[in-house]
Image (cartoon, protein in one colour):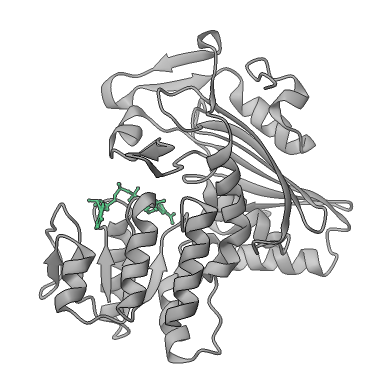
Length: 361
Ligand SMILES: NC(=O)c1ccc[n+]([C@@H]2O[C@H](COP(=O)([O-])OP(=O)(O)OC[C@H]3O[C@@H](n4cnc5c(N)ncnc54)[C@H](O)[C@@H]3O)[C@@H](O)[C@H]2O)c1
């Protein structure tokens, strides 16, 4: 196998490959990154790009952990070279790219697993099973709450960070579509609405406090084909960082999934590994992938809605407090925790609950 893009989140894929190599399940033969590489296991070849790598090295699996706008070309290159792919989320920056990638997967017959690791969590799957069994009563809605802290260092780490487009190419690196993408994807999974045709409508309210192009504080309401309202309320400008949650609003009770820690109503569950699952699927096609590309179609509808929405509105300076200096500098949006919780609790957009910095378009 090979890993493409190794200095950011890709470092964790290199570590995972080494773990599977130690267990005799895989062999990391090469990596590709224009920034080069150091501290790799002995014998791993290093290339500047995936094209060079594939020209001289034969691999069964390519893990792609590069900027969003490179996902489609790199995944296409890997599949056309006969490799199966573990592609980081969000799989593509637009619906057109998603359709193109789906067509390449169908044409080449290669597998594409998408890196929504929370979908391989037993906590997520247990909650989905509880909902299906009616244990929460009638499902009135699902909400996702993300109250995160991101500093100037995060947005300054790469050219593509915080961009909607770069050099004329879609990137769509906003709070909803990238850092907190797992929340939306998990909510769609819980509703059984992962497919491209499972989403009926999407309303977006995108704002930003940072000097970036994309959204850092947003509310998005998805209505799924079965009529479930899914309210995503997220910010990267919280006072304090806390774990994201997905809340299922049942007529009998609510359930809370803390997907980063595999917690369901405070109980810890296990999680399968997406790469191991891809290896098992290669060996036996009857083993289903946890996150096949097709199961990210509903999520990609949200990416498309954010991509085609008007540019995020800047939050007026009187509602933003700045803390820290240099790489630690960050904005804190006034009362944002309260408003994000309130939006999620009532399945409402910011303008519907009187958020003072939210303006109807
Ligand atoms: N699943 C998760 O929880 C999770 C977490 C973080 C990031 N991600 C995803 O991982 C991807 C990368 O994010 P990041 O934050 O690590 O980005 P990053 O910009 O910090 O790192 C990207 C790496 O890819 C390399 N790179 C850039 N273009 C390349 C190319 N054409 N070929 C090979 N290498 C290339 C860069 O040199 C860098 O090493 C994104 O899709 C992101 O959403 C997923």
